[in-house]
Every structure is written in structure tokens, then in C-alpha cells.
Image: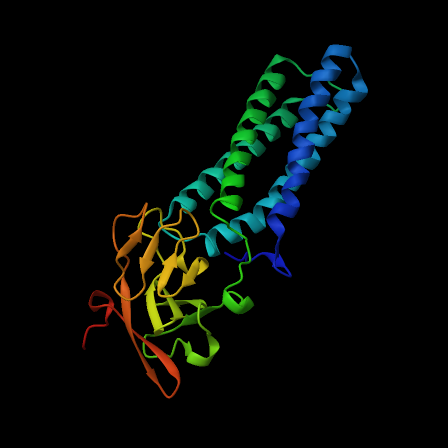
Length: 269
């Protein structure tokens, strides 16, 4: 799904993470070589790399947090993975802060305590990087997809179900848009048989169906390839086992209105 913290569709978070990764890893390497050669200049280089890496890490965390809150689908494996990814990164930064405070000055020789903590932090950083790669390349967080006919991702926020989700002319066949209304995420799309509406939640791992592919009247989840009939919600191909929720909709004067499911309809006063 397209990043919210982006410049011309290019996510900012991946641009910034190379700085703390390189600086913190460099700090560890400088200390190891400096310890082996008894070189004060390398200890100083390690110290200043760590300080700069800490600052860069918190800067990189800001767009990452924005995307985790606003882009990663709720109640999904990606949401949990993103939380673990961010938590491990914060832990690494805290460890490097402790190490920086523990050292009396830039040219102080690192002891076994500092080197041990740094080694553990680098290992954790590698695990966190693995999770970040999974978020980007499997969960496709931050990817700006295109639909049929080069259609771009569309998203709309409605304040009530009585408001139209879109005009049917906004979507051509094979295109979808994400509509947020009443705390729900609903996909509105146009298939070969007309306009359809269904839940933006794959029943396998919670992937965003609005970011998938609509071919004919079948939508495919972008995360693991589960396919669903958009009219009935039934599973056409796994790994999903349960059907998705579908919504009735009505076209009035070219405007598309979604009918909420019974459990989400407002109660009469």
C-alpha cells in the first residue's frame, strides 16, 4: 500500500534507515578494530558514529511510525510484524544510548561490557532488518501499485454510510478504491459484471484486498495469493479458508452508495 510519508510515491522510511544501519554497524566495527589495535582514533570514530546513528535512527522512526499507523492494515500479521520491527529498533537505540553514556569520553577504551552490548544490539538490528524486509517485499508496505489501465490507488474517508463512496465513472473495469467509513475498511471496485463492494481484509493473514488485483470478478490478496469471489465472498483459491464479507451497494444518479452490514447499521433512535 502506498506510503503516507512519501515524496512523489517514494517512501521516506527506506531512504533514511540506511543511515542508522550503516552508522551503528560502523560504530561496532570501529570498536572491534580499535580494541584489537589499541587505536584511540578508531574508538573516537566509533563514539561519534554511535551518536549520529542514534539521532538518525529516531529520525527514520518517524516516517516508519506514520506508515505503521496509517498504512499497515489493522488486525493483520503485518501490523504485528511492524510492531515487533519498531520495538526491536527502539531497543537497539536504547542500548547504544546506554553505551554512549557509559563511556566517559570519545577516546575511552571500550570494555567488555560495551562490546558485549554492541554485539547483541547488532544481532537484534539484523533481526529487525529481516522483519523490515518482509514488510516491504512480502507485505508490500509502501509500494505504490497500479491497477488495470494504469489506475492509481484511491482512498476516501466518509463520515457516514449515507454519503456516496464514489461516482461510478471514477473506476474502470479491474480498478478498486479503499473507502473508510464507520471504522470499517470497504473496497469498492468495478468488475466485468458491474460495481461491487467487499471487506478490505483477507481472512488468511489480514492482507489489504484493496491493494490486490481484481480480475474478472475475482480479487486476489497481494500477500499470499488467496482469491475470493467479490459477489459472494467465497474462497476460490487458498491459503484462506473463510469467505470475506461482501456489501450491498446501490447506484443512484451515477453515485455509488454502500449498504452497511446489519451489525454495523446505526440503531434507530
